[in-house]
Length: 298
Image 1: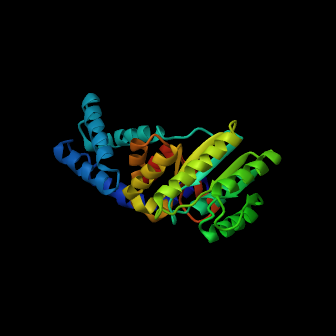
Image 2: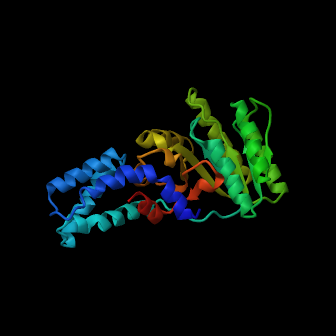
Image 3: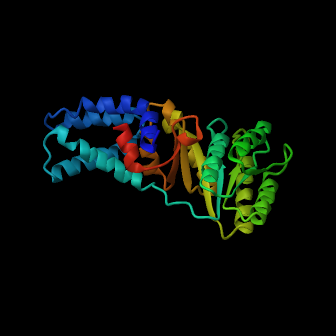
């Protein structure tokens, strides 16, 4: 299955919910206030967010007026253009090696699985990859990473349960340097019951990376679960406060009908949307593309 086919298949629930609703208002009738109100309702109910929805509606009003568009059927492509423009602001540049990606997120969002999929993806691209099992709080995290490391045929650096995560990262960096590797992927804890300790732990890891690998491109990527929609925004804010995030990736988009929240994410945060997950296999973790995403949901 090709890239777009995987994305299209994975976004079926959102397309059915969002795209089908739009069909009923892009009917060819005259553009009036009822049209904008119905569109506003559809966008909000599809988890675009109130502020992002207001922006889209205002833009559509202005552009239909400027381009003298009178019929609803004629402004569907205009809506597509606005959505692509918003999402392209979050389109990432290609990774440059050497590269460190610290992966953050609350427990249960698919953080460790995403790291495993990335290890496989990068390994298949002939990159030398090191995994750092810095989630020393959750005993199963290291075991899970080792399974993925074996599949991807890459090295994983682990330590005993409860060891300082920054020490694991330090050891991983020494291995990274010794092997002249390309990409270091760092798994981190996701517990939030002791928020202050977790945030300080993440800051400490960041300081180690910046001190030991100052020449590397450094990404701080938060993972959010697509099925939580707008509720994921508070998680992004939390981790952003701690470590100044650079990237975001979304998992489980195939399990939600509210994939429109990516548009709100792109509008609200100055972060690159790097990957979207639309299935269980490593091949279902896709590099984000704004136009393809909008085509898939409309």
